[in-house]
Amino acid sequence: MDETVTITRGEMLKVSIASSLGVGFEFYDFLIFGYAAPAISRLFFPVTNTLLSILYAFIVFATGYLGRPLGAILFGHMGDKIGRKYTLVFTISLMGIASLGIAVLPTYYQIGIWAPILLTLLRILQGVSLGGEFGGGMTLTGEFAPMNERAMWLGVAQTAQGSGPLLAVGLVGLLTLLYGQSWFVNVGWRILFAVGVIIAIIGVYIRLRVSESPIFKFAKSRGNLSRLPLIDAFRAGYWRKIIHGLGFVIGGTTMTYATSVFALTYLTTILHVPLLEVTIAQVIGFTVLIIFSPIFGMLADKYGRKPFMVAYAAGVLAFVYPYFLLISTKLLPLIILAQSLYNFMGSWMNGAYIATLLEMFPTKVRYTAISFIYHVGVAAFGGTTPFIATYLIYITHYNLAPVYWGIAGMAVTLMAYLLTKETKGTSLNY
Image (tube, rainbow, N blue to C red; front, side, top):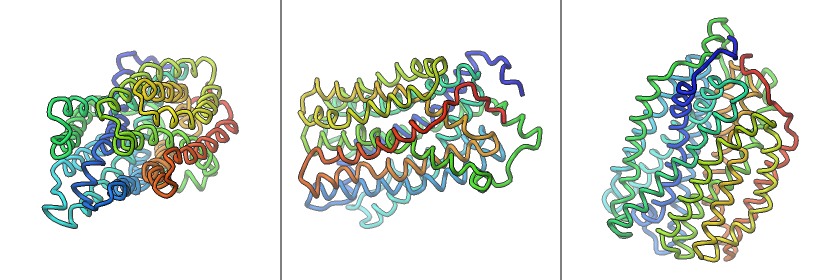
């Protein structure tokens, strides 16, 4: 296949939207769990110590990430064998079913210990389905995009990291404003999970209207597919790149979850900042991410991926302590500043690092490798971050203790980016 084949902007936009829905669902999902954590902790883990109750809720949050590597292996295998398109249709359908289950789940007061058990199982099911989303969506977008616009279109798809949470915080703000905090704790959080079903239905419709990746179809026509993509990814010598790629996601994942899920609960539950103020700050921050991700993706196509990746890691490493210091003031303008600056720096690498990962692997293992890297990293360092950050405060009685976790993660990622070779101009058709 000739990668210079013309693909219209309209087609690329449709592919990017189809791919971004799963990413948006992922970030929507983890943020609504953050908003719902205080309610879930009361309704599913009724203990007298509020902080301990929240810790239990975050343990359940983390268990959802246990299913991510399994989903990455399962759906990566499907995506590299039968195609990107229908694998992505299946994964988003499964996510919708799991979200609906959480939305209607009875509480501890109604079915006792079965409530937290079923909640945990549904979270794991969500994790399995999400394990096939990010790698597949980014692979589909990258394989459709022209080589000289790849990071830009991946940046467009990555705007879902902002639009998904933006939908979440917008709904929370609206529901809280209209019906009040107590209503949200009892009923409103369920509506957030029910909205996930609507996202899934829209996702299925759009993905069925998108063509299969032209690069995958070419590889299939040549018989250049893998029988066991995960085995080939490690056996064929790509395991070094997989380990390297894991370094890419550790810092960004740690800080993204710290500045969204954990920060939300930290501000509202520990510092008692009004939920509406936290919502305003996060809406502004995510809007910044949406605006600048495609712009810096376009710059990465022009000047290379590595400069923007290194700038992000170095910038955030220096900003970890100021971020937590700013939000701990409980002053809305400073919380907005913290959220905006972090998301602005996040936009520097959104298109660049995904483009680099795609360019590191051949077609026959690309879906599997990207999924494995991303979801092992997210499971180990994203799903656990709210719990670890809360636990650090719990054992140290120091509200800024999560700083240490954030700095450690970003230091690893900075090192991984510094050791990365520039991949700009690499064909994906191999």
